[in-house]
Image: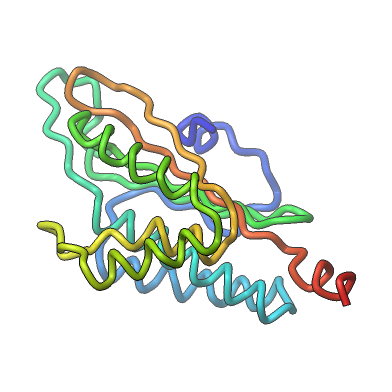
Length: 193
């Protein structure tokens, strides 16, 4: 799941949206509107559209809120890349795939890994309980977020969160995050009836 390699070697015809660059508030709004339009064209199921839109919005907002500019004195990271986020959204027959990537300080890896592993260990009820706990008792970060993004993504998709850290140097790593949104919600519900 090395997102940088995928970005450089994409031959996939199922790309809904691909972006690499600085992530600003205005861009977040534009990307969300673009994805909303594309998913409306591609997907007829209202429930799937809602899940996709909610998960994609959370992923993009996480990228915006938690992307740090890298101060790399070793010149191992290109100046453009140091301010860039990466977003790749693809459609497959059975699911939509949303991937993000950005540089993070190595000092944040254990905290992020712990949060993601904790979320992945929970079932639906556990996620609901964690969501309420963070909502009512959570503290806000220096970026103004309460840490609900990953929990919301897991709740909306019903999927485990996939992630990797690729160490770039002693100070920074590249964090890739991937989720899948099933395109088969209605089929399963119809078969169960």
